[in-house]
Image 1 (tube, chains in turn cyan, purple):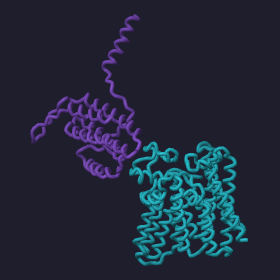
Image 2 (cartoon, helix red, strand yellow):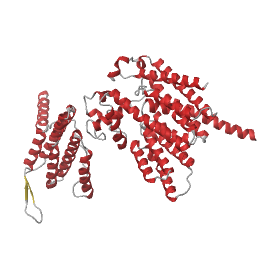
Image 3 (cartoon, helix red, strand yellow):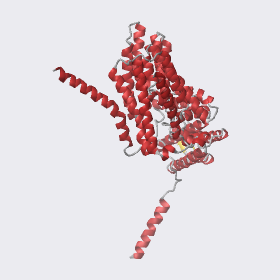
Image 4 (tube, chains in turn blue, purple):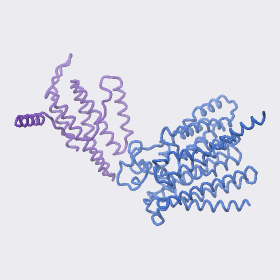
Length: 377
Length: 175
């Protein structure tokens, strides 16, 4: 039965990878031959397929969690499932749901090809570059931290100036940190459930392995710094924590927790790591919910808190809420996919699809509590 | 009666035309004046300026830096001229001209590096027009020569007209 599920999972991931190419941008000339314009011409069908695939992805996720809880999956199976997921989704089209990977490449190109400061010069200021003509944030200076810009020199140079090659070299780079984060979760928790919860979570898989968002690199560094603190390696921990802040600044929210752990480490007192990860998840969630003040809640921002939530999977309510939030967040793409506009009712529908699934579990929890109280009387 | 109104209308239009100064028109926007010489904040600004030069690395970055500084010091010079602080005003104007003089070489360097600078050339041209507009305004309200008489040293003659014409010519040359 287990092998059959894995076979279906492989089939599903392959279909998802093929489906990602219906979103192909005509400007990527190397893939011109397979450009169909399907996602623009057939909005209803595209939306239907996307919703179905996300739902199926979550069904597989639930099955694998269930199999893990029932102890029907061992460490070898976990490694096999993670490798399958990574290998198949690696070949998906990265600009399917977000143009961020193009922003990373553009920032890198401004720094390493044009030798300009990406915090001063916007892509739009260098006309004539074909990449800058179709990316979505050409009128913005670099939004990411200096360490990210510096480190993207590696995938940028490995792309040898070829856009398609650069896109996939950025994907390899991000995938490496996805695997690294999974490995750290396993080392920290010494349990395969958090690894399954993290590595096979559809939101994390899609936003990292398909879209190649850099949030995973920030989380990898912060988890590495916590892991080093567990090993009492203070200097390295501070270095990696600072590096993580210099990726995307969000881990600034973790400063109070980090300082507390440093203080405890110096004092050589006992550290309750479950509490540390619990407060870390809450602080990163705060950052997530404050993001509309800057722009809006983007689905991949959930990567900020999900790994911490999965490390404390005993906190059932928080776990269910987070998983359902990750489910809802993937539907934020649907209103635009369907209507083709970011205006009108799209923002309202985005909010509805995001918050209805976690609200349902919240209401169920409140109902159960109330029912329990009434029943006990 | 009609003849009287015609003459009156003609006179009004004629007076309006001969009294109205027509300056070069540019949509380029200059910044607000920053801190002025003499204060502690101004010294900090000078340090910040020196450091930020390295932040604006790259030929396009240098173009932006030089133009930004040229704008800043021009606005500073105008404010100082308005308050008849000619000695300080001339210093600021010379700084502005010096920065403006470096804008075109930065663009030429960018061009040599294969960067398209067509948009930047338009910006520079608009900036030059606005600078000239500003300098002509200063010239309109400024004496041709000003004798600065410090308390403890000999007087200094400032050929303001010549300095302003020189500044205008620098803008015209770099347009």
